[in-house]
Amino acid sequence: MSHKTVISTNDLAIGYKKKPTLKELNLSIEESSFICLLGVNGIGKSTLIKSLSGLIPILNGDIKYRDKNLHLLTKEELARKISIVLNNQGVNQQLSVQELISLGRSPFTSWLGRIKKEDLQKINHAANICGIEHLKNKTLGQISDGERQRAMIARCLAQDTEVLFLDEAMAFLDYPSKYQLIKLLKSLTKEQKKSILLSTHDWELALQIADKIWFIEESNILIVRPDEINQQERFQKIFKRYGFYFD
Image (cartoon, rainbow, N blue to C red; front, side, top):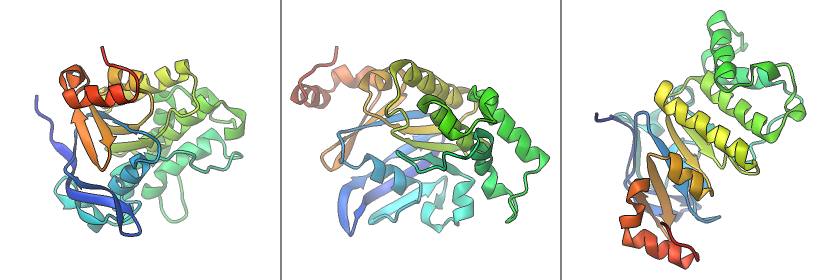
């Protein structure tokens, strides 16, 4: 069964202060897909996610959401199509879990931020999917890192976007929490038909769960399915350089 493309790029160049970090990128994110973005620190993973979500301007080329240029969409239109969890995203620790999840409805509420019955249903549904309904009255400072990450994802689900970008969402989590989180994300692509791009340093989990791997190497991105990596000579050379091999 073929899947339609949700986000695509054409000769995209990204970076800061007119200095490209990555260039000539021709990428596509399909419906209901789970993509893991891998690469060493400082190579451009966060820059790519911020560029694809419209948070920072691009240097060249274009990004399309369906058939529309991403940078022609208003902030409100973007917020209804793409949600994002950034690494080390600053959040008031005195907010309750319920209040954090409710922020996901901001693109749909009036300027007064009034929560309607439909909004509340989506907030409760998001908390239930993420398994944190019992934490709704606790503050973010009272829950664990893993629970906080689930709350951040619940905010994205309440936002009800087709695409979710997560930048190092598993950083600082122990292995059981990482596994629970990635299992949740995978289920969202199957049951909620979300398209997810997750940047991570965890090769092992990425290879187990991703539909595709995007690996940033120098100024470009190698794209491969996990079951094809042992057939890709370039990947084998990369692994060897880092001191391990793929079996």
